Figure 1 (cartoon, one colour):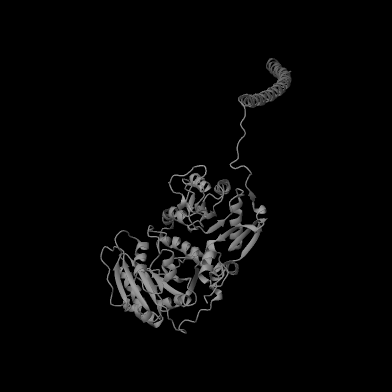
Figure 2: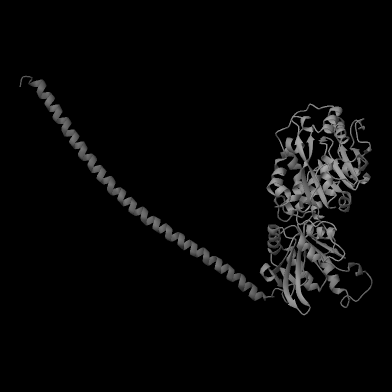
Length: 556
């Protein structure tokens, strides 16, 4: 029986102690490389001294158009081969895909050509793959602080003897953001689905080969951000991410993300925004359309009016990146001669004509996944309010739940239900299901299923007449209504002018009173000035008379 891991809680698994178990799975290590011969030699030397059984391990080095063709050095695992990237593309994703296509191992282990793994690096990750076939295991990276490199022989000796920690001086820089997510969520066991995917870093990571191939492998249209995009698709496929601190490796120097983060982010953001709906902060532009929608609403066939009402409401959602899939036997709509008004497929044909050219709507013969992390199924004839989808998904994200079942109404056949599913929960249930398992019970055990009331969340029946018709009014009524609007406008303007006039009058009266007070003050100041002048003149005159007397009669 396949182990059933709830959410990302891999704590239900018990990995064996390193060196105390017997591996059986074959693993292919894929190393994409471009002009990295010097560090590639160290990577292969370290791989040649791994604790994982040599007969279960092979290595494929993919030369991604190096200016000087790469070579396999003397110190390398016995089953190492070198291939070139095929024509038609370039970049890391293209090279990894070439390695995946050539890989024979049950597990594909991707390792960059500037990594020097410790002795038990491969073994630590592979023990998880022996426990569950949908685990993605990740290594723990230390960065070197010097450009000085040991020789391949020194690396081989250190790895064999368990002295790898002394190979390089340790840099202060770390993957702080990833390690914080891991440590804040109990080693990632408590991380919600939309967060666990973020720590997927491709420098050292291993995948079940079947799972990786089932989702199409790498997105070879990308030359950067391929790890982020792949991590998102693995989440939707039901994968569980397991970072293992005992799977340690050196990274020679600092990666681009640490050396030039701003430039890398500027480049990656448009590509990530188009492909990873979880990054909501990158999808703030109103009216935009994206490659991968946030939610895909599936509407089964019904009457033209019912389907149109439901789809119209969904397209008016406050979530701008919602897509709609209408399922139906579209292949039956041939161009053969028919009675247009008595066509047995008339409703289907009208639905097709209504939405055929709307890029947000897909017409499919059956449910087809488009990579959206949420999937809503709603019966035709039911409409949602503008914020229904947004509130439902926020509720699911808050609880990291797997599904909501929305009770709409009781019918003669039972209860009409809409359902909102987390794609990752559906995929996980399919991965672990036994033949006699009930899907609903599995989703509940893995992620949780909650029932809610449709009316509370904004589900209602469509109007009796759809699309609603506006009442036609006579020309006289139209002109009268226009005149009434114009008269009301003039009345508002007259009222505003009257208010303005009253304000001016009040200001004028106040100004008049102020002017009178200033005149009274000015007159009082003038009188005081005259009085002071007269007193000053009398004083001066008395002093002059006294001076003349003193001069004329000095002895008096």
